[in-house]
Length: 211
Image 1 (spheres, rainbow, N blue to C red):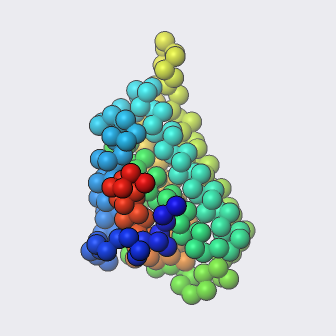
Image 2 (image 1 turned 90 degrees about the horizontal axis):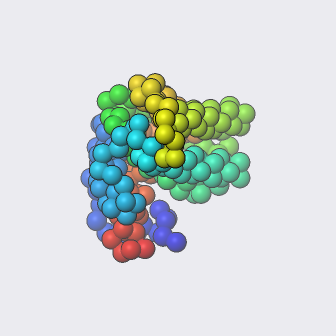
């Protein structure tokens, strides 16, 4: 399987990035990938939150992000930084994609753009284990609760409509907490962008080569 560590072997083209507007850069690049994934996943162009068939996509992509977060947690416990970065990169992709699908823009997030990692050196040895474990669970819980707000079912005649504003509010809070976790793990804004961009290139390669 081709992953971040393999990128130099197949991807010569680099993406220019800036130290400013880090979250916007991530959202802009994810929108590019989403255009391709819509065709692959047979997704509608515009997601309607109270459409029961569209809710299936919102739930599935959220739980894909949660699965990657669980793998990142496993890597954290094993102190495997390479594996951690790989899984974090996937989680960034899926969680960002869900927000875009829900029509949430980066301007609605409350993220300090160029935050510094709270532990820039010796990341693995300086982690506060109990606190980090709590944060992993907190993010998993919040994204899961967001999914719980989506109660439309294709087989129901009478649908339970979602409070769209409440749903978006929970997603925004969950994403903010996710970015805080990355900061607590020691990753600066620039490092998060680089992690994202490297996996972005991997995904573009996979799409291009039908990998």
